[in-house]
Length: 179
Image (cartoon, rainbow, N blue to C red; front, side, top):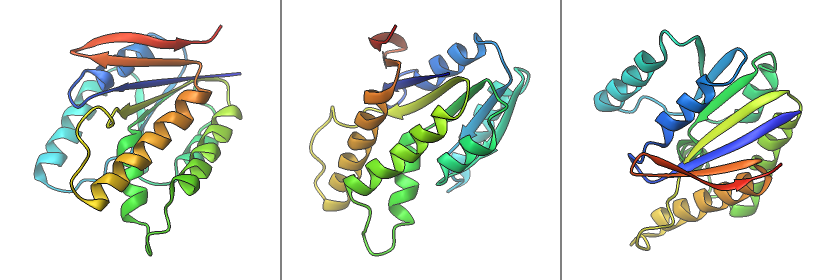
């Protein structure tokens, strides 16, 4: 049976570090699913820094920007999977969406497929995401749409998750913990 953990927080809140440390404390082979595409030299440096942090900790890494359910299904042998991050996954879905067809309901269907893929496995799946709803309302329609999609994604994962942890200033706080 799988345990699903959602770790959220603001930008630079320590959520990825906490997720990695938590994952490394668990038994089993570890898979890191990176959703971030390399978009510029600075992003390339960030990705390399994250790879270096995992280098000697027994992680295998796979990069997948859109098809999370397929990656989870194809890698059932890993006891611990860390997906970092859902925020970029939603970004990638939004920018590969021709014709503006990605609605909140369609996104919820995609999230359900990811959750179903989690349920086919044993071990632990950790998802990292940004809490984007704590700031001001964005001034343009695309940014508001993105905020709404990420918010819906987070709600759908949190509803199913066994644990939800929020990090603020590097301090993890448990919001939900199922027995």
